[in-house]
Length: 219
Image 1: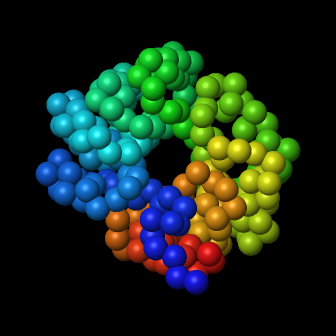
Image 2: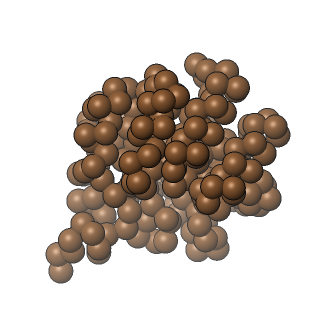
Image 3: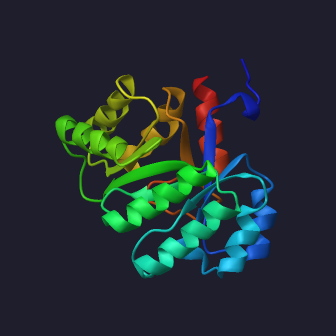
């Protein structure tokens, strides 16, 4: 049976390294999109313009090339403007996390608490502790993204979905690509994809069209 894309689980396209006009043009093509503020170099008024579009948008600003204060200001601007979700790294300092979560609650924006491990996939018990902490921190959605060094790592990540709700699991790297396709079919709220080849925001991420096609083949 062939399913229309509207009947498939949500695929969130991650946008980075685009100008504001480019981003706005692209956004109208998708049901759900992540705006990587750390890679967009947007002014606060541009953030407001994008997140005022009344679309399903995730505001994400990873650490690395901005101060915590600067990141917080952009995320608060996005929430105020109408972001549907905001992503907060689990290792964030308390003041930062509580500021973002409080503002999100005030505006009806859902909170994604994210955990990233770029070296390995920890044990099941360690991952469950991460999930418990993320829920205590106020996560409506918990995102677990770990480097998959084997197919068994991917299998363990997918296995978490049998015991948790509101959980996104991602195996980073080539051996984790299966999680990007299977997880939303097994109940993850959504999965992430790139705008096109060469526009990936994480290792092993596939482009939107390919991801949607592969999910469709399973349903």
